[in-house]
Amino acid sequence: MPIIGGKYYANPSYGRALEEAREAGAQESSAPGGHGQLRHVEVHPRAGGGFHVLSHYHHPEHGPHAVHSEHDDHASAAHAVQRVLRAHDAR
Image (cartoon, rainbow, N blue to C red):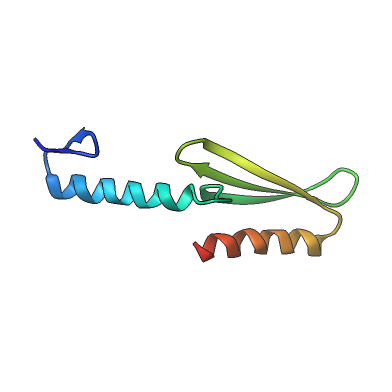
């Protein structure tokens, strides 16, 4: 069995495709300012008014994490969600 990316693969075509995809994802996710792959975005109301926006990511090297922001009104919370989604789409 051939060794591809430090692992043994019985099917060399599958192994190369898998390792190339893993490499491409790691390079994209570890770019400067990259949080990793976006999993989901949550918006929660705060007890005293306003909103919490939580953006959940998974980084190949650092694992899962969330980016948190607080907003006083629904318009700024919506803008924060749009900004997260646009950054994700730009990748």
